[in-house]
Amino acid sequence: MLKLKDTGLEEFSFGEGADDQFYVLVNKKISPDGIDVKRLGKASPMKFDQVLNEMGCVLMLNGLEVAELCMRGELDNDNLHESMYDLAKEEGIIK
Image (cartoon, one colour):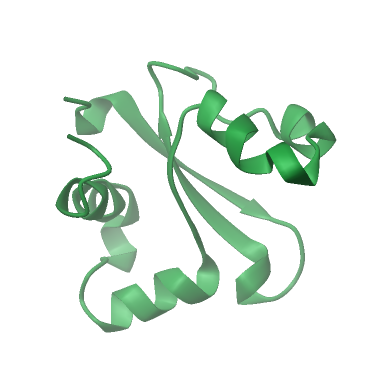
């Protein structure tokens, strides 16, 4: 099973709105340096998810989703990395 220490949390912004902010839980065993934004930017929209998966993306949420999950108590904004990891485990994404 993937452990918390083998993951990282990365934030990307493609605009000003909360829906333009993305939080990505990354498998550091696959991508020790994290998501390659340049490669991702060159990816075909039809293969975007595939490229993210190849780069070790475990879970990606936008800012609106993170805010909603924090309001519900399912994520902790002060400990987003660990709480996103725990959510991925609870949802069966990490086994």
